[in-house]
Image (cartoon, one colour):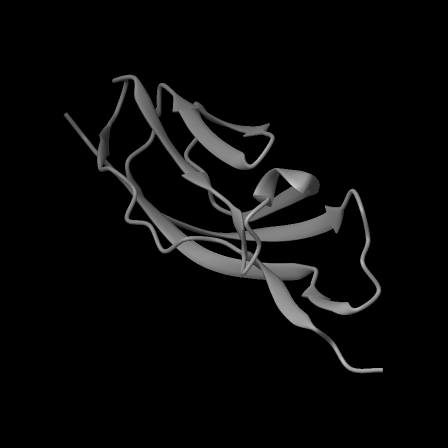
Length: 111
């Protein structure tokens, strides 16, 4: 049996805002499912690997990954976000790419 559609987990390209040491920092990315009008019909599971500045927390909120806090170190911080999706209502005739990942960079400058 062939697939009638092809949906896939997707993370956006995103240039994170430049932050400052000891200044409140907040930025976010929002995941989606390509070729799917009902993005909210999936569970989203994230993993972040790499360097996040001390003082910045990573919060997972449904389809959104939020980075917020007061960074206490400057530099370039490279990390990778991994996304896995799980449909609430699996459809056997639709091909789904359940996982993806993307690399990002955050820059924190000294005051």
